[in-house]
Amino acid sequence: MHYSVIFCDLGGVVVEFDADRLVHQVATLLGRPFDEVQKAVYDQELLLPFELGRIRPQAYYEGLKRKLQLSWTYEQFVRSWNDIFTENRDVTQIMHRLRKRHQIMALSNTNELHIQHIKTTIPNLSFFNDWIASCDVGLRKPDPQIYFLALERAKAKAGEAVYIDDRPELVDAGRSVGLKAIRFENSQQLEQDLQSIGLNL
Image 1: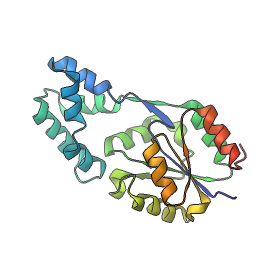
Image 2: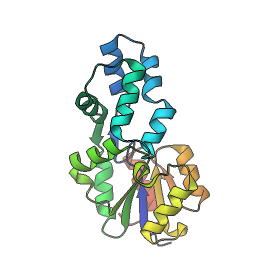
Image 3: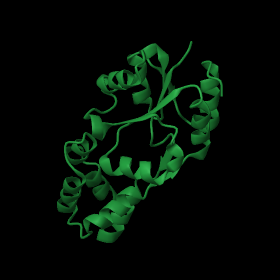
Image 4: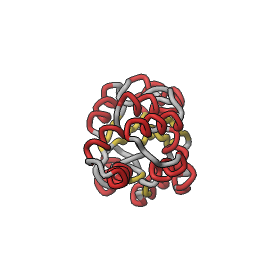
């Protein structure tokens, strides 16, 4: 089977992240329980519109500030919000090798601040031919429509696409629309799985 495109998740695959770093910082600053702060930071009534691009970063910050009585300035919030990512170099090396024969496209549930930060601070992600971020397209995985949109952008059929994600429910969603989906666990396993479906690394 010839695969013309590889859709790849960002966080948990090509970049590693400490999702709770900001939560710990805020909990320590305010002297409040971790669970209480975590609930506010990931409150879907606030985070979901942010990840769908329906509200701007400033609006998310203002909502969080109200919920927690947070004293940070917007600039302080942005620094802590973004300071969670590191490149997974083993995976980016695999992607650079794959790019010689395949389109590689980012497909991520993320927000405006994170996507801009990743693009500008991790230059080794230059292998991506295109970036499909939930905040830019107004759709989130596992909605089938975001996979259909990705295929349209790639000018590919589902059977011609490989999809890599670390979350099993999103892998299942990709499979349900016909993508050859691989659950990422580590770089060695990813390389083996890619070779097993016929990709030449």
